[in-house]
Length: 504
View 1 (tube, rainbow, N blue to C red):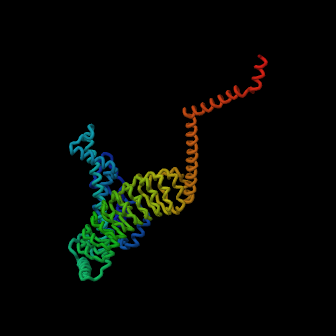
View 2: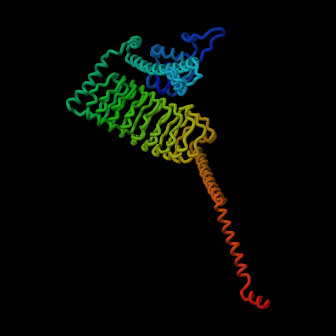
View 3: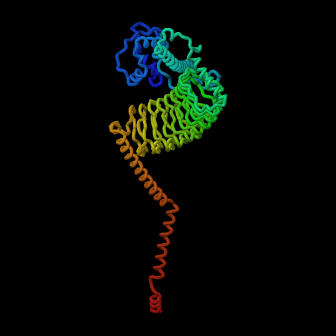
């Protein structure tokens, strides 16, 4: 329930400085009050590597006044975290889906299950409410991270922290006016016919991107990362020469369908937003080489994304909620890097081995959902780096022994029985040797099985009635021929004549 340091570094740091939230135990005879949880003394712990890096980047976090102001700014997150600690972990997605389906069927009057009682329906509603509570909590975390960045920026600029926390930022200040003037200057330059190939408006607190940007016909690079954009105008599809579009670290909940008109787009970065889906039209961006959609809320990828993005080299979709890959992803013949760690993947498509160019694969931290790898995994002959850590994989497929080019392999935090923990500890070369031997043994066993089946088939064919009849006819022919030969050829004609002559 705590925010992940990767997606919410500042918030994670601040909350780690608050009292610990181990599950409270009510005193005997008393009830636990969720609105007023008891205070627990934090236990001392060593800072992590990520925290050291954060403090190096933001040294103001060492000041008690700054940390105190940040703590006040995320009081709602602390309260929500306490409440969720009592409510329990997020329910399983399949349970949520089935609960919603049952509630919808009951509302429509369908007879789904005769034995479903009102108590069962209420339990389903509880599951759905818990899921929605966790969804709201994630939104709260994202907003809190933004608030902390503003508080820190205000502190470093020497502004009063109390004033910074309560300041209404909807009205543009001097900085906002300057940004607007910069945008107007860019558009005016384009209207005057002057060449504008690159627009860089990074970290300008932009909340709105004018439609007129879609009329800058010669634009090749547009970078509006680290702003507060919630919508990208449909006119973006008019940038037919655009090659790079960077929209990272905004507040986007969707992308326009017109993004599919960007036929020359090579790099698209929409990481760290609030996207739940990618438009199906993104498959039309056939020139795309790099796609970064990490740190969002994606639950699936467009069905046909792999059939048309044949030039895609790098795909980052980590830190999402993906449950599976579409089978079309196996058609990305140019894919060199695939990073899908921290998702909810239950497995890989059976034809994953068709990704013949894949060299770097990260499937770590899919936890209890990732339990096995398909047999075709061994067809990824160009793999050099593989991270399968923090999953529930019990055995590697025998075909894993074919990965001769493998240089880096991480299998930590898996309940592996094959290969054994002892083999894994010896490193990637030991694992390759072990799996290679298993692969050769499997091939030998398959060959022996084929030979045995061939021999059995031949034996079976020999024992059929037709074969028996043929052998019988052949035997009768041989015996008959011998008997006739004996009768006709056993005595010579001269001998017969002499016997007859004696009798006469």
